[in-house]
Image 1 (cartoon, rainbow, N blue to C red):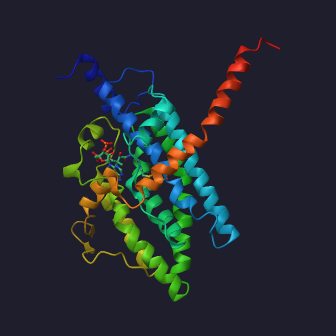
Image 2: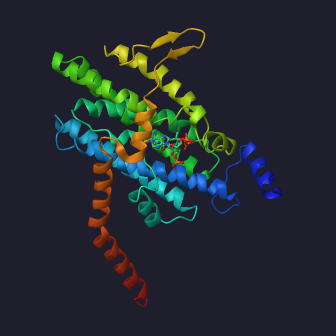
Image 3: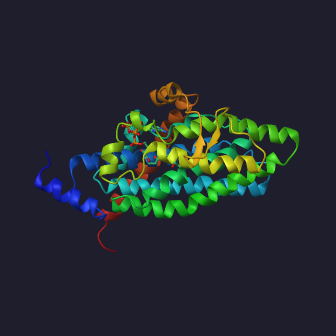
Length: 311
Ligand code: 3HC
């Protein structure tokens, strides 16, 4: 049974109005935003690790510079999103605490290793490609600060996807060994990328409420389908094969039929048992602890400055 405020709030949402931080919102709306935007921000920050692994190993200076710029962008995306979620009354320290304790998640895709240079292509092409499909609709989400952050992030994300596809194109057209590396990267990252869109709709815990509040604008399966329909022709164009024997164009659906990812693997990775969960969280905890002295110094400096009488 909705209270008069909740009815008035839902009317604002249905009218497509933006909700700003200081305005009244149901506690459940606030909680769902903290969860989704906080985990989105964590994904950006943790997502720097698999790619960071290849900055010192890039094959040319140009590739190194491009990868450095992309990883730097991800840090910026994380900061925009942390600022958006802090408007809801949660502190940065609490967000980091909940990431480190496993209480908050980050995207499962980052728990997979990046074993060869071709993975830098596949991550840009597939993972950032999926992120674009997921983030473009979020520009219209009902919470003002989140939608505005998405507009900025989507602009930068398309560069990420293009540079990844350019790597894959080059390697697929390269020596047989390079083409094998590109195909191997696609084989290993295809299904984990499909998992980025979340469980199938029938198993999605939050979708119904999230879509009623226009936090999430499309269902998980809708966006996953969009990703497959967009990506399969891109793979074929450069002579790579999507590792799915059941992949087939379905005329009346106007899209591909395809095999679902292994959902047991998905929930296993979410439970912390993916190939790299421990390394990723360990790296984040270490970075946080190694940076404690710097944060303390900043605060001490700011306190001293604040205490100093006006010069
Ligand atoms: N990895 C980790 N957790 C996932 C997940 C994934 N791929 N997919 C779903 N989950 C979690 C959900 O967070 C939820 O758990 P929680 O209650 O503890 O939060 C549970 O599984 C059930 O899933 P639901 O479908 O019910 O959850 P949502 O309605 O939140 O849908 C989502 C999941 C589609 C990821 C949605 O949260 C979303 O769109 N988030 C914003 C986008 C985002 O976070 N993208 C991360 C990709 S990485 C990225 O964008 C960086 C780029 O630069 C590469």
